[in-house]
Length: 312
Image 1 (tube, rainbow, N blue to C red):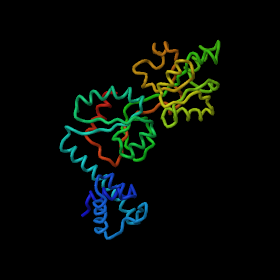
Image 2: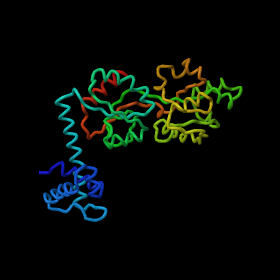
Image 3: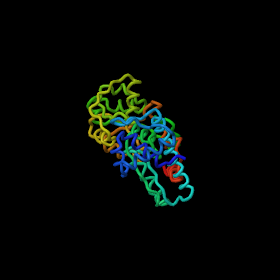
Image 4: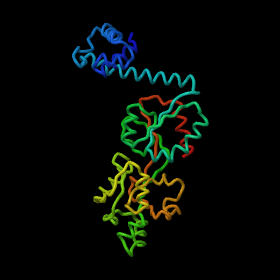
């Protein structure tokens, strides 16, 4: 019968490729680690390592490494499921969300969730779409919150609400590039926000890897426009603040307007910003949860999804 501890110790040695480092990592003696590996080799009547420096896996060792990873992951999933069935008073939930979307989303959901489930420990990972997708695939998070479609494979999705990416045009840019025609340009943008009208204007964009930037780049490609980019940053609030200072045009999710009218709110007017809906299908999307199909969905996760759909 396979001993899970033997498998865990074997994997540590396979990953470190050095018995001394692996034993140190496991807080056991080198002799004890060698004994666990020897037990596996006796059980299967194979040699798992070539005794080289560094250690290398034999064909049997490579096969066992793959299976051991799968079996230990299944063991962990089974343990979580059984504990979850037995007792839902405690548990953990790991969420992945962008920095800015978290500012809007989490205050609307987490207080209600924690009130109902005070003993569920929340772990938060913040990053861009690419980083969150990789974290979900690795199992670092239980849920990611992002715009559809998700690029990560084997992900089940649960729609939350509609989202729209708006074009943000500062009054100062219109004054500088369209003197005497500002009102006319505003009317044209309101009727049809064609980026060709703004082809000579500067842009402020967030870094590549973020979904809003991906959408912006796709639009630029569609209209065959090479934008003059004056600044790229990871923080979408930074580009909005700089747009309010007249440095350039940018893109901003309507959801982040935090209750103000995206198109004619007094706050926007005071900041000298004009927000326009774009006539591109990809700027109208769906915010959704994503979870890995092969992993057990805990009650803590299911309850978070339910409460979020009620609150957002």
